[in-house]
Image (cartoon, rainbow, N blue to C red):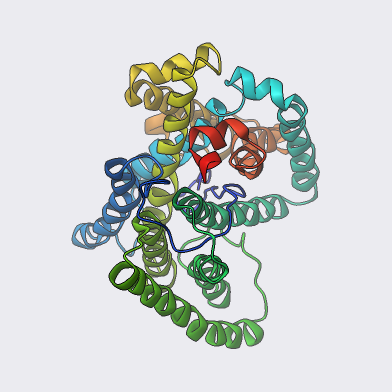
Length: 386
C-alpha cells in the first residue's frame, strides 16, 4: 500500500497485474527452475519480509504500541521507505525504460491524464467518494499482486494441471478476500485503508452470516492446499517452494493483520512489508536484465551500480512526494516535512494530482507484468521456455 493519509492507516497498494498461466505438478526444476530470481533472493524477499513483519508484532507489544496508533518510526520505515517508494519503482519499468515507453506510448500518456480527470470529478463530488474509490482500487491491486506471484511461480515451474491451477487460484483469493470480508462485517475497526470510513458500511445482518459461511471454506482451502503440497513434496517429489511460501505468508499476514488483531500498527506492518519488498526485487531484477541486454536506455545504468543507488533514488522521490502531501494536504509531521501550506482551495485539483503515482502504479501493473503481452519480460524470466 502507499499510505498517503495523516496516519499510517492511509495507504495504497495492489497490483492488478502479474497474470499467470496454467499448471501441472512441477518437474524437478532442472528445465524451468524453482525460483523467480534465485533461492537466496526469493527466500529473503518473500519469506524474510514476512518473518520481519510478524516479528514486529511481539516487538510492538513489548514497546506498548501494538494496540495504539502506529508510531512515527513505523510510518517512516514501513510507509515512506517501503510503501511509497515501491510505488515510484514502477517508473523504471515504464516511463524510464525507453523501449517500453516507445512500445505503448498511448497507454503511458493516457493513464495519468484520465486518472487525474476522474480523480477531480470524484473529489469534486465528495472527498469520501474519492478516497473510497481509491481504497477499493488499492484493495484490488493488493489481492492481484499476491495472485500474480503465485501465477509467476506456476509459470516458472512449468505447471499445467487444471486441478493445481484451480486450487492455487482459489486458495490465494481465499487468503486475501476472506480477511477483507471479515473486515467489512466488523466495521468499524481500529485501522482503515486511507482514511476513517473509506470502506463502505454495508448491512451487518448480511455480512456477518456471509463471513461465517465463508470461514469454513477459507480454512478448508488452506488445508487442501497444505495437504496437496505435502503430497507433492513427499510422494511425487515435485516441489514449488516459492509458491508455497507466497501462499503461506499471505495467509498468515493477512489473517493476523486484519482478522486476529484489531490494530493499526499490526495491519500496517503485516500488510505493507510483504507487499513492497518483493516488488523492489522484481523491478531491480528486471531492470538489471534490461541493462545487461543493452536495452531500456540510459536510466537502466542505475541497475549497474547495485541495489543501493536504485533504492536511494526511490527514497528521495518518496520523500519529495510525501513532503507535498504533508505540507499541502495533511499538515502534520512538521518535524520531518516542515510547516504546512494553505492550499485548501486547490485541493480538488491537487489531491488527485498527488495521488497519480499510486493510481498509475495500480493501473499500469495490470499491463506490464502480463507475460503474453510483454515479450521482453517473458524472455527475461525464462517464461518463453515453459
